[in-house]
Length: 255
Image (cartoon, rainbow, N blue to C red):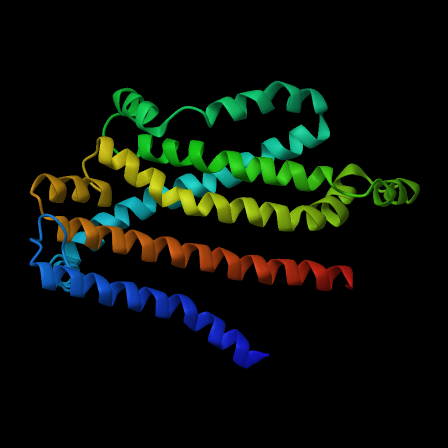
């Protein structure tokens, strides 16, 4: 079983290596200029030469992403509990949550820049708006899918609402919550980069705009590579923490 799992993990690596090799061959054989399509070797050299500058800008983007992401989790958690406890709140806010996701980022980000300036605040707000929806909807869905027999059992045991939430609702909704968090994590860096792209002073999005305007596509692709790596590491970290947390709750319940 372990051998098959290890082999399965090699498949995506093999596909990436194959695509990179074909990409390099096509660019070399056709003598495609770097300002049209840089080769993987050109991208690696650009990343190496501008590494310190790219990392400096990336730190700003990651700060905006993680601050906004943490606030979105806290706000989503509070609103999900309120929506689960008071149905009137769900009826009031659920349509507004859906409407908020229909507003294009490219339209709302410049407005935030006008209101809050070119600093990190409008980017953080943009991340919150992007990440908030999947987290709150997933948690609400998880809280509503608990079997009524379990709820009735807790009532017969005279459990308080807080005890019912901590010992029953939260553990059973944890998988849904983590799914929403992982979905949101795939968007958080992207939303910050898009906000920076539309207007900002620092950040990897600002670096990409400057590189694009200079027709330095190798630097643009190098930036994209850094964003991909940061996003993958973030998702794997959340997945690792989530698995540990679910296992801890299962052990606490004696499962």
